[in-house]
Image 1: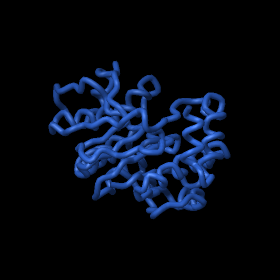
Image 2 (image 1 turned 90 degrees about the horizontal axis):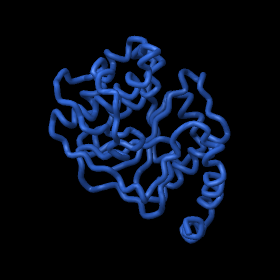
Image 3 (image 1 turned 135 degrees about the vertical axis):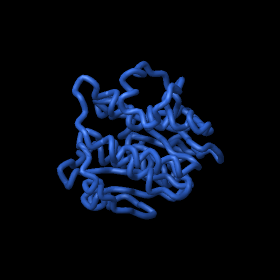
Length: 240
């Protein structure tokens, strides 16, 4: 099992700011302390940008060759999933792992959580499996992976076709979430795959907008502590 990250700079056009860099460093260092191999999948500019982090390996990806719509910001994640031939957990750069976090030793699909949703009709327009099977919950993509690596290749082979077209403005959320979360949820239901949620007590995912305003103090504190020799003792004090 390994932990992987991905990033697409769109040929160097997307450059993360200083707070994002700090958040990314906190995430990667906390992942490294768990003992899993940690890998980066990014375009050349992304590999260069994140070269200050202690990766076990890096892989250059070329999403631009698929000529996909840039509206699908999660396309590079789908590409990265499809390249995996061994168990993995893909995480976002705004994820922080607590000491003691472990990845389950089973599960075709491992996810941050299974969540409620209400976009069934809109999702049907981007559905990879044309069936009346409707997932009861969505498999969340913030932390996502598992022990079945073939399912991601099937998902990506469809996404290569679907992500060519533009996203209708009035259905942007359903298309962008649907292409990843609804489709992997539907494939899991269709094939009867085992879905295992992670332990929410063992990680933080700083989701949403205004991250610096909402989480800045905590992230700055954790970032300072994680570089110290007594990290685990210090973090226990912060967590109370």
